[in-house]
Length: 174
Image 1 (tube, rainbow, N blue to C red):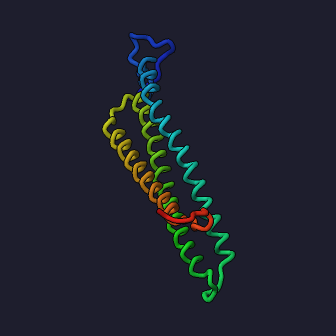
Image 2 (cartoon, rainbow, N blue to C red; image 1 turned 180 degrees about the vertical axis):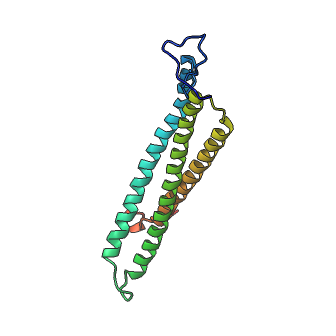
Image 3 (cartoon, rainbow, N blue to C red; image 1 turned 120 degrees about the horizontal axis):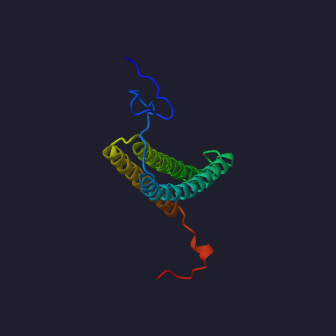
């Protein structure tokens, strides 16, 4: 016995089946889902700001490495050792910034999936809160790792920058 669509409006005496795959949800349920989705969405906006800063730092490091590579001197030149040293530091900074960006972007994508999952769960009346909680925890771990790598990149850049005393016009160090 197959399903047959109901007449509109449905006749309660008729044994037809309504063919709506999504259950009807109350406006209050959707409002609650919207309220619950706002903090993760703001978190995504914050991560976007971090990604903007990280990509800016990455771009500056790449530009400096390209400039240094174009001015690269032969091995017997007095500046050669300094150039190799600086290129190695830039290479490390580029790698750190790249991985930090990937971690933070993956975190944002996972948070987007959690927000989408919240709406799917509400609309389809599915119960996979534990899965969404685990996804959110993984997103936070990715964000923490990305921020830790970003801190390492900033510290690497700061440690490599040493302004010579002659430019600082210091007479004596105390």
